[in-house]
Length: 159
Image (tube, rainbow, N blue to C red):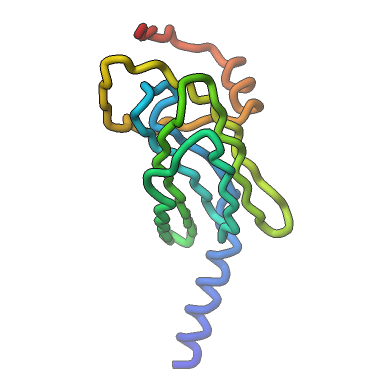
């Protein structure tokens, strides 16, 4: 029995050391919104126990959140865990605003998300929309690397 417990502990400890690289990202449901509507902002930490510091949402009212979720999986000895922090924000006025970087501390190092630019348009007809599907905001270095790769033609959507 003791051998079985010792073996299980070694398997879990070995799996923990094989975990993937830590990542920290931000996703928004939209970067352009009509005044009077709200949108979703989600910060996700993968493969770390987060010590999450949200940004100041100075130009927005928080209408929901923070909602927190977490997951853990171990498949074939590969451990993956994630934690997400979701906010629903409503802009206070028209204009161009920024959601500042959020930060986490992992093993004495700080990771930050890139700032997110939000365009708030006038809404004279009072149109109310639901938040759209989330899209990830890439750090500048990832965007530059992606731009070096051949790209497919993009579809333009005009408002």
